Amino acid sequence: MMCAAVLFASLAMVSCAVVPEGGNENENTDVTFSVAVVSAGEGVATVTVSHNGAETDTWYGFVTTDTKKSDLSLVYEKVAEVTAEDLLTGVSKTIELTDLELDTNYKYVAFGVKEDGSVYGTAGSAPFKTDDGKSMTVNADWTIEYAAKMEGVDENGQPVVATNCLIATVAEGDTSTYFLDYMSVEDWASTKDNLYNYVADGIIPSLKAYIAKYNQSYGTNYTWDALLNSGNTQAVLGNDIYPGQYVAYMVGINADESVARVYAYTEFEVVEGEPTAEYSAWLGTWTAAGEGSTYIPAENPEAEGTYEDGPISFDITISHALNNCFYYLDGWTNVTGCPILVEYYADYDALILYADAIATGVDFGEDGTGTIYLLAEVIEGGEAMIYTGLEAYIMNTESGRMLVGGDYSDYDLELYSMGLYVQFDNDPNGYVYPLSNITPYFPLALTPAAAAEAPAKVSTMGYKVDKTEGKKLNTFGVKPYTVGGRKFSF
Image (cartoon, rainbow, N blue to C red; front, side):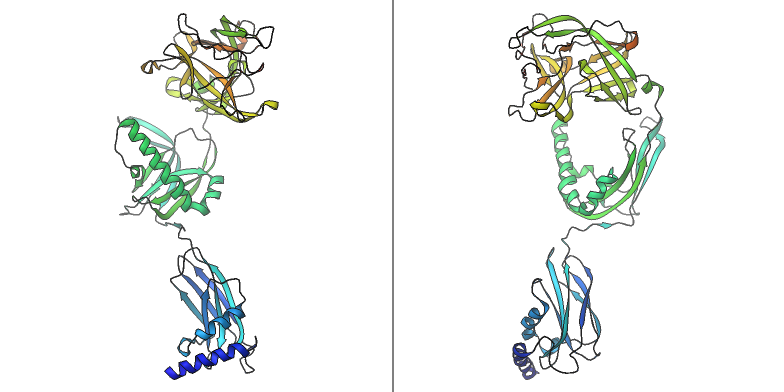
């Protein structure tokens, strides 16, 4: 046998130099080989080789990462390594390939070769790529159901109705951990094929960052996996979800921060609920009136104007955004066309104005684009400052509908107003500029606009930052935005 192997190799070397593409002139000349890829996974693949020759014809196949060369060139490079013991027979055979590299392009080549080392017939091949180790598999034992409403009891035993609920169910005895959430069908369509990276690079880091911030804020020592679920789970999404098509999903995540690579999902539709009478009562146009400051520009546009304290008023329009959850509020401090999304707080029949960015990429003509902010105006340590992250409320009080600032006395802050500002994208200093001429001081009274006896509106623009006698003045600058751009830092 040893002699036969040596003879086989020597004959193969000779045949490589002289055998043309069609092989030796013999009965095997017309044999054609074909290769079909059955599957390709993580370091493994399965191919099927077939040919139109005789059952006893001998042949050989091999896998290579050299996918650019022609089959014939690869065959003549490989045949010298083939021994008689390596030869295969049969007109069809399934080949299992193992120990392949992840995420790698391969080609499997099959060709006819006789025991004397001569090549015959026409070789066949098929390319494939191994899995990158990030494939996700649907777990058939996981299911998710959506319920628009669920009746239950709260921690005090009182009956409650939960809205937009997800019910995740796993097989009995399944103790694996997972994360349950939802997204729009459009987002799911672009996420599903890249789900592993979405979990590994998005969900897990976000959960870790959240729990770290929570521990810092509350002095707790939770680990990030406390946010994972195990066993059957019910999640109440609430009624602040806009109508539309969504996908609920659960993805397996291990406590060691690795992706378990199993998931389940289901599509569901959210239908907007009917508005309550309390929610509907806020819709319409209102006049906000009270005390404030009005900026009066000087005749010389390069000079600083003056501020006049006294009655101010402006109309606001409150329109539907999402029944029983959100409104759009337009016309704040006489700035129209820039609606603010405000939340409806049903427990107190109040609207919440939250100081934050409300519009990005707004076109301001020759000044470029910018972000519009609703900023909280406070007195801190005797000085006027502007902040994000604070809240004011429009609510029913004993004296009627009022707009009041939140209570931040524990932080030595007095929230006295909220104003609209723009921060230009091309401003390297990141200053913000006021958009209105008036600074309303809380509280403000709200009355239906048609019945209000409001003082005449002013059309100039300006700003004043302090209102209490004896507190330090701080006007920050001299010009309103439309005259030259007064700037503020926050």
